[in-house]
Length: 151
Image 1 (cartoon, rainbow, N blue to C red):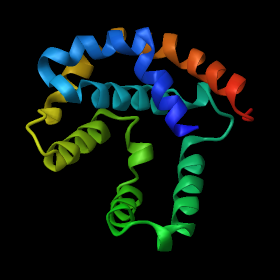
Image 2: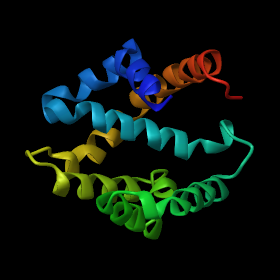
Image 3: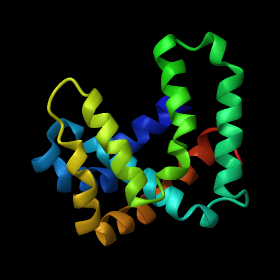
């Protein structure tokens, strides 16, 4: 399901539009940044999409991941530790949380990504990215509902 969602997302014209706005500044990392921007909008507007509050939802996800920690690759287990400690899933709702995430990703990229500058672009074009997210996300929800046994 995750791969199908990624493929659907990568080929969606609205997502491509968001990526195009960032390509000159972030090149091959523009798609990763848009994905994180969309995570921000989902997190910031969570109550519109789920009856479960975001803190409860994120705690449940961390608990589930920790159940399988013993079988995770060492790098993934280490990442999960920091992910939970810094509560990345919840922090995406704020600019500070996004900045922290982009700083960490920028440090981990092999090539120069400039991702540490991505929050500035989000602030500048916030309404455009939010509009695109709100256009895209219901279509993604419909795609998942039609193709997988998910409510």
